[in-house]
Image (cartoon, rainbow, N blue to C red):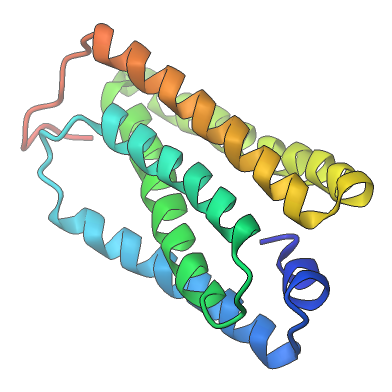
Amino acid sequence: MTFCPVLVKDLLHGKAGDFSLAISAFGAGGLLGAFGLLFVNATTDRRMLTSCFAGAFGMLLIVVAMNPSLRILPWLLGLCGIAMSVSGIGANTLIQAHAPAALRGESVSLYMLAMRGGLAIGSLLTGASVNIFGVKHALLFNGAIALAAQISIGRYWQRVKVPTPVAGDPI
């Protein structure tokens, strides 16, 4: 989202209204993704859910970078909002469900620290790559790295079985 203004203005030649629509679509997608999680069974493997939606987000970044149409961008960013929301909330739920009760607060604090720090570092690195290579190539690269990382993590999680919390267990 940090580079959405550059994407809309420089790559797709949009105006302020187009930017507002794109950002609104991303936010609406995020809300829709969070709402959709209310209907996911508590026994669902959150590792794969998180990994699949994070991989989908990486794939969507690639599609956004290759998208030539300003009219399609809000739809793509809405899907990005869904994927980002589900993967983030799924990861947070996964940590809380598997952390011992005595360490739950610390584990969530470390997760939030990693998220905030990781987003800031990612924005800095992406900003540098946008400056050097342009927004399209930077998003392509970021999407490819995210997708490759999530495929690797997903494959690892398929081999390592972690007990899934039982419905009704306190989180």
